[in-house]
Length: 52
Image (tube, rainbow, N blue to C red; front, top):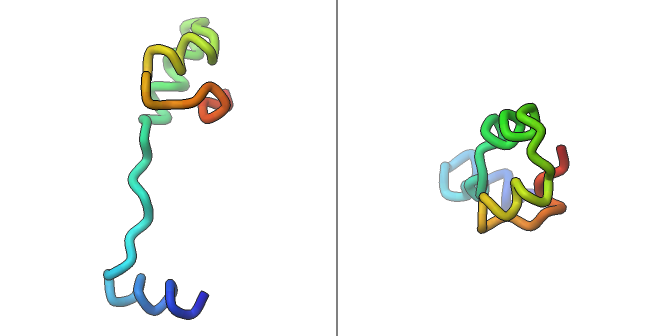
């Protein structure tokens, strides 16, 4: 872990970008859309990634 910490301090190591917008997912869920349908609409996301 020391290597990753040092790389982050030097701005060399950056975390992976999120593959979906959480606010959009929560808004869809508030509209009553099921997690399965949300995953289908997002196309790049597995149903278990939704986790609402």
